[in-house]
Length: 152
Image 1: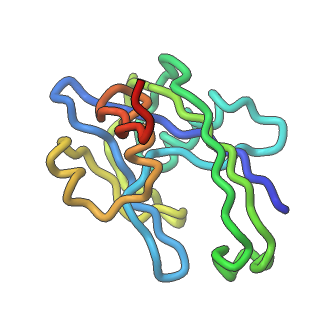
Image 2 (image 1 turned 180 degrees about the horizontal axis):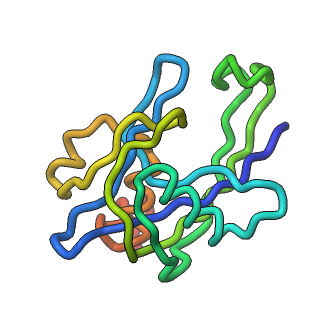
């Protein structure tokens, strides 16, 4: 099994809109949280600051740790160009709340994202998005937690 450790940011503005880049790979894609994989030896908080800048043009600061998520992708569902198709992938995803401190909105050049923008909660509901967006919204208190199958 392979492992990937990544850090992501939930960033909202004064109007309550959320910053989301559009991820693309091998003919698939969706709106996601800004962030990505850690470089060897990189602190996760430093990685998310770097990734936010690369994907959006904004400088940011980490405000708080929201949570850590574990996602295992079975080998038969992995994308082909990784050279590891057929090998399961464990994703450890570290989610932070962050705030913009400077910079200006711009689309990443030659990276894994091809668009970026600010979206209201209603607009997000209509977007083709990866599950990480709603996970981040829940951890940040922007979405209610899913109803539990068990009641007390």
